[in-house]
Image 1 (cartoon, rainbow, N blue to C red):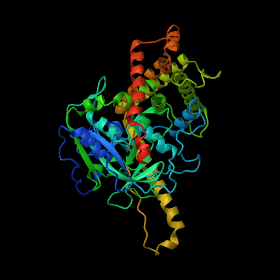
Image 2: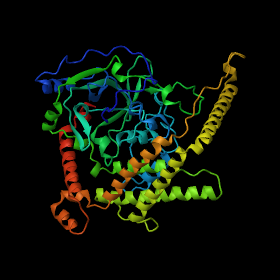
Image 3: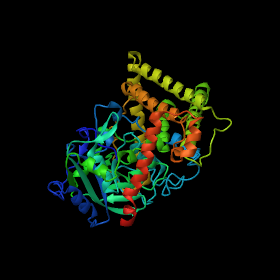
Amino acid sequence: PERDDGAGAPEAAAARADPPPRPSARSMAGPGWRDDFRAWAAEPCPDGEWVYRGQSARFERVVPSLLRDPDKRFRQTQLFELNPVIAERLFADSPIFGDARLYEHLAPEGSGAGDRFVLGGASPTDPALGFREVLNALAQHYGYPTLYVDLSLHPLVGALFATHELAVDGYRVSAEPSIVYRWPATRLGPARLRIPAEDDAGIEVIDISRINPYLMRPRGQRALLAAPVRDPKPHFQPFGSPLADLELTDLRHLACCEEFPLPPGAGGALAADGASMHALFPDAVDPGYSYLALIALLSLVVHEPSASTGPAADSLRKGFEDGLRAAQSVLVQECGRLVRDAAGGVSADGPTLTDARTTLFFGADLARLAADEMAGPGLAADRERLAAMTQEEVRGEAGRRAREMQEGYADAFTEGSFSFLPPAYVVKPGDADWVAPEIERRSRIAADVSARAELIPSYALEDTDLYGALAEVLHTTPTYEAEARTQLAAQRRWLDVLGDEVGARR
């Protein structure tokens, strides 16, 4: 779960009226708060199992990251989404994921289970997760905003996020009072739970706490993600509604919500008990960070080719494939650095790491130029015309689907009682003001990944003799070595702290 860094969702996102929260389990956290917190966390859940979230007490709402920080305009478009085709290709060609599933409860390819995921809707009959759900869940955990809210199966994870704040040099103990929330959840299957709400559907929660162990962030955070957002669009509308039209349920205002306040500086006491934010963000030793960083970059700077033909389509297709091969080259090197038994080397027809880096950043440079052109005054009229034309196409498609539905279910309606009005839908054009800065941000992350791929393997730091031998021939940096050692030690200690408590409670 990522700490709230914003003051709440835009007011345009309609929050449904919910009853006030239940009284806190403790009216205040006194000197014995650690024992009180342990006792509170040990209370059996009356129905199902507890799910937790921690945040600063100054944030009065529990809302998705995509609906916070309304000044960040790129979050108000649909362009934040990661490309699932790129993600599937990169994961499938990985030397450590390969054909193995990211998650044992991932729906079989082609089944469609979970891929038709409707935010805030009823749970699919298949309890498995679709690939797009897993991809969005990973995006949330590796720094890209979604419509999910981070939760955890473990109260200590909630307490850590509640008592730490993000600084330039990483997370540090916060001096502010904080709070841990919890909700009872009914388990629908290994990958899905549901928090009760005033409507029958409840709040759907997906469980990725047992995802592939090489994805260390969600594993260490015992990660769950709640979907408290509902799209009110008619079911025949083929596209999602603008964020401003979505309906939000504030989890804090559910009747089943309980809370435990923590005193200022409580993070220091948690650290003394063996809890560490280094264990929750082990980026130097987490291949999941590298995969999501390159998937996010490629989702902005290369575009999946269409079925059309001709020189333009051929050029687009070549750029798409070159970008994928470059990312695969970096990730193969990264896997070899992080995983002792990973398949090493790059295939004979793949680019070298230097060539791969050049290809990736050439694509980013082209995307920056395109963003600058988009911002030019000469294209303003064209963008408006395209937006208007796109809206008409959307309305036309919605009308076609509605007519098909009406014809297919004609006998279910009394003649003349069912009429169709195409839904109002505003298609937002690409906003160049956010594209270029976001390309810069993702390029910096990708540059960090490709640079780290050349460093000494992190696993070697556990073996003194092996480390000494490799240090003589491989490029190293003192900063990297110190960070990797810290994160490896924190991961081992974190697993000792957590133990098998979650599994035992299940």
